[in-house]
Amino acid sequence: MAKNPICELFGIEYPIIQGGMAWVSDAHIAAAVSEAGGLGVIAAGNAPASWVSEQIDIVRTKTQKPFGVNVMLLSPFKDEVAKLIAEKKVPVIITGAGNPGEFLEMWQASGAKVVPVVASSALAIRMERMGVDAVVAEGCEAGGHIGELTTMVLVPNIVDAVSIPVIAAGGIGDARSAAAAFCLGAKGVQVGTRFILATECTAHQAFKDKVIKAKDVDSKVTGRVTGHPVRLIRSPLSREMARVEYEPDAVEKLEAMGEGSLRKAVVDGDIKEGSFMAGQIACMLEKEEPAGDIIKDILNKPAIDAIIDSVKAVLN
Image (cartoon, rainbow, N blue to C red):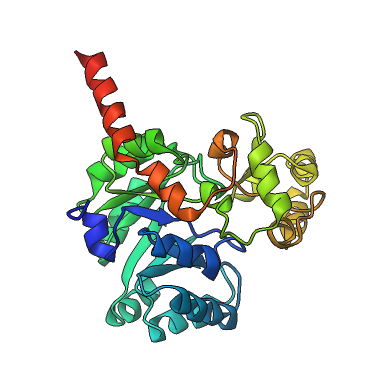
């Protein structure tokens, strides 16, 4: 895969990016993914710059390979985080929940590759015109904050709309889904939920168990009324959110219920008040394993070749 444009762009061995999941994607899982040949990513989330700085330093003690930081542009600390990652010369900056335009010149001057997450072709086109290096097209199968289009529709639509490399995300967790993403025109894949089950991931065991036990009916979307829908695994909190979704003061109630709930799930393992954000692919995951084994399984060349051969057989 040496000539893959994503591998060349980021200086990595395999075109697989670990998703930036707040409270989940810390230095430990990021370093493990990078060391195994993918692009490990630290999720800044709503954390202050001091925490992000600490995580960057830890990654650099664990691996000399490229890594990234995911910047959530709705964070109250976005300005200080944006300046920090430029000063620390983070190789790859992935952005979500906003327009990275105000920071783009500073980041590119630091030598970083900038890759926004997009949920529409219009936004992808806008980002290309601004001069970003690639985009992540994330379908609504993903966990956490989502758009409306499925990966199956979003990825080829964006591939047709821009000339920069497109990375597919949402519902990708094995060789079959990775092969499908490449068939849709993606040059790389971003995987989040499956890396929750990496042995190097420090998420609470209760969170990991929730992912392992998830069935296909357990993936729920809450908060549509707020304009910022979130996909998570069914829990007491998700049921309570569904109950108040369309009450007169639903927005205020949902925001209050959601505040701090992800940390409660990931760090504290709080089954009652935690928000167990995960993608639909959770229903297909059954075990914990090292990050390197996850990468090998998702980008298993014999398996992907067999999938391609089966497609050819159907067409013939």
